[in-house]
Amino acid sequence: MLFYAELRVRENPEISPQVILNMLFEKLHLILAEQGRSDVGISFPDVKNGQKNLGKIIRLHGEKNTLDDVLSHPLAERMGDYAEVGRTRKTPDNTDYCVVSRVQAKSSPERLRRRSMKRHGISMEQAVEKIPDSAAEMLELPFITLSSRSTGQKFRLYIRHKKADAESENKVFSSYGLSPVSTVPWF
Image (tube, rainbow, N blue to C red):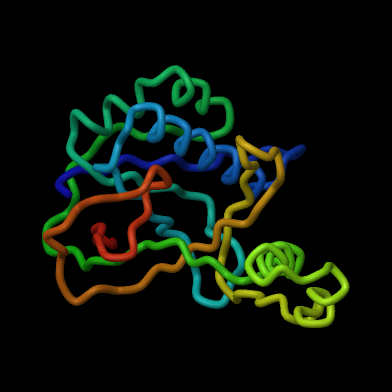
């Protein structure tokens, strides 16, 4: 990926940086989904090991014309109130690479119970006995909080940054700009 652009959260005394980052990421997701993009990767260069937040920078990776298309979308143009939207720049030479992926936890006992009831034809009481509240899996990864367009419910999108030995040939990303195998430059 030869180019990148950054969104840097602006300081706002009324809104926490994490809330702004959530909002920016959600708008980027909507743009990528609307444009049918699978050629834009996203990373969070401020992320620190052991912290639950992703920092104050979202970095987009891709080709120059692709990034320019994303950043010229009307939703992206409105991000300027909450973030400094950087111009598209050339990726530095000799960078490291990183896989930035979504990690899903089995964190909702309620969802697991409904699934078990449907699959095994058991009652709610049996499902509660089989899957107690303590069955929730909690991840120790940073996350973005998003709202589901279909249900309106909020959910956490856990994100893992994992150093890669080399650049991947495959460059296909989800509408979140994430991939379990494709790399992005890490600098």
